[in-house]
Amino acid sequence: VIIPREEDLCLIKADKSNLELRMCLYYAGFDTYKIEKDAFQWMVDNSDGAYKEAAAFLKMSERDVAKSVAHGSNYGEGIIILYPKDLAKRSIKEAIKMGAIVLYEDWDYCGGKVAFSGINLASRLFKDTSLEARAKANQILEGIYFKKFHIIREWHKKVLTEIESTGIIRSATKRFVRLNDTPLNNAKNAFSFLGQGTSADHVQGDMLEFYRVHGEEGIPLLQVHDELVFEKSKGWSDEECISFLSIMEQEDKRIPGFICPVKMYRGDNWAQIRRIK
Image 1: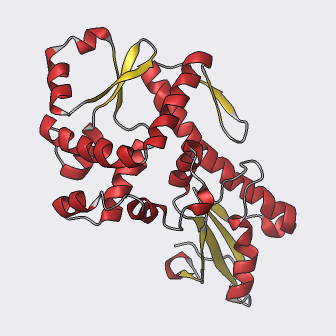
Image 2: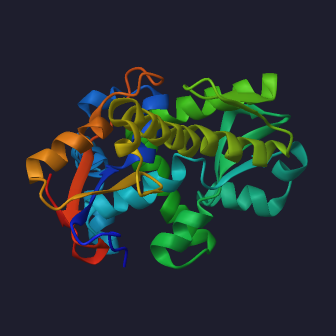
């Protein structure tokens, strides 16, 4: 339990709502200003009821199904590269025929074809990695998620085209990394760099803005992924806390068009913290 250093101080914190999902949607071309505060629920609400059958079968909420599917798949979860020698194997042919592997015939990358195994999602949803379970997972992944949000697959294709031709991936904040691993690892690293890396840049931008506006009073006690925590006077009202933390709601000047709602809290210690917005 984190406790303020002085008796007259309390903790105030703000954390981003579904930051990494929003960042991937931003790169894919969605208008983040139109995405509701709960981005996973927004995906359900904009799926035309596509998650209902899967949610009933899995005995999960539609939101939880959408979250499980989206969280990994935006980073290329289950991606594999099938080369001619792989496509000639009987086991691969059988998996493709069953739907346990989804092959994109028109998606070439580094001498192979891009495909998705569904194995991770099957393990997560069904606790089963058999071909049958992977086929069911791919029905949800490809038949629901990417059928509705196909723009994300188009973003994936653009990323792989860029890294294959240049060996470099650049973020919206102008950072870049050189990718020198295997084609498969380069693909995974590129998606993670954009989603997770730019999310880290975004929170870093918030910290810089707090310091610019408030000086040393704007230095956080700690940063936890997409959260910033400060020590402030217990005498502050909830409104004063909200006003101070509102910097985290602003658009990052380095990522034009990206916005992410925040949730705000205060409390005498981490265990007793309560939401104020």
